[in-house]
Amino acid sequence: MGEPGTFELYTFDTKDTASKMEFPDANGNNAGGKKVPPEFAGLWWMDGNPASDYVASFGRSDWKTVADDGYVCVNAELHNAQHDSTMPCLGGMDLPVYDQNVWSWHDEALGRTVYGAVLGVQLTYKFECGGDDNGKLTYCQIYPNADLPFTSAGSWISIPKDFVSFDMTRASDDTWIRNSIIAGWEVRRGSGAQATRAPNNAKDAARASSFNRSLRPPFVHTCTCSL
Amino acid sequence: MYMFPLTLASLAQEGTHNYYLKRITMGDGSEGEHWDDYMSHGRNAAPKINDVFGFGEDSRDLVSDVLSTQCLSRKVV
Image (tube, rainbow over all chains, first blue to last red; front, top):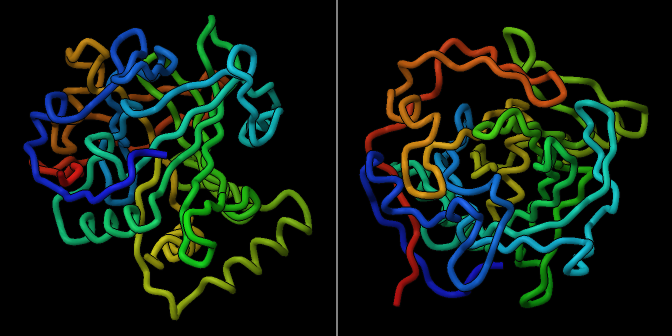
């Protein structure tokens, strides 16, 4: 969780991104003694993201390991659904999406509106990672956490993994590929077009159907930040 | 405040939530591998690369456009 308080948006020139945003140094060190794995150093552009945000940073995150820090993962085993493989969860960190200078937004009405919603629920993404590619993490499960108004004051809820699951898989030192599973449906980019893999079983199919029905209009169509 | 679940609804209906995290700035502040693509206003070709398991190659012809200005949040003192 980031720092509580009141925030405002300000505009900057895209060419000045590096000087305006906070980010981990080459060793993964952040301000205040916080630290992330070095593979998350610098700034990350969300290329192809259909939502109203551009750049993400782990500059206010603090990685804790299972082995050394006693971090307790949401799931001890990470399941990479794209490749149907599992691996031990090695640690985790939070990324407070609403916090200062770590997440950039489209300079337009929708970007500002979505940021307002993100701030309202203090949206925070929990990253839990594992795998080993020459000593570097290869896979992260991402859990959206929100302080929703129907919980008791100050409490948190995690969006159930059955409903929405974000993950990312390492491609190179400078590229990760983001995939999503929504209500049991895997959404990923296929050859030449978006490809959607059907639920694995009848239970998932029923869950997906129910989820879609329950959240269809009259809800207003919008989009969100989406690392 | 109530928009968060709505955003999930949007994702569920759109089913197009898939993209690429690309480093544009290195930890020392220098330009990263994808800086030029980031600044290309969507004119550069999208690099073709699979993940470490051999999946996920970008099928787009071009990278996405980034406008010349954007927004950040700051804490109000």
